[in-house]
Image (cartoon, rainbow, N blue to C red):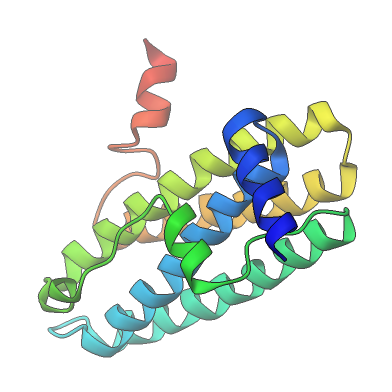
Length: 175
């Protein structure tokens, strides 16, 4: 186990590859698991029923992708992160107990931003995995990205915005 951890640390600090960046994706998914459950439990206001149900749908969907990605990585010969400590270390998202008191629209906006960050990370992994020639992992990641895009669009529509409105990744492309 120690040898595996030392190898993982070496790879994360010396060689950027799809497996190393995928640990960050899994970390993000773990954080989303916690955050989506928190929002599901604590959302209130006029949109309670709609968002309570939507957050549950999103955390269930997140769990499916979490499992698919980890299993695909193992099938491809990688050893993905698998402990809470690793997920917390690799996550690029944050969550906080104070967020349970956020307004419903702020919860939605926060999830949109988390999905966007995760989508950008997914795009990086897709590019790396294309270079590495792992077609099956690429297919899994493209399908995951498509789900993120759809969820971003739907959540944006919920708060009265266009799909790409306020999306820095697409604003930069226009420059």
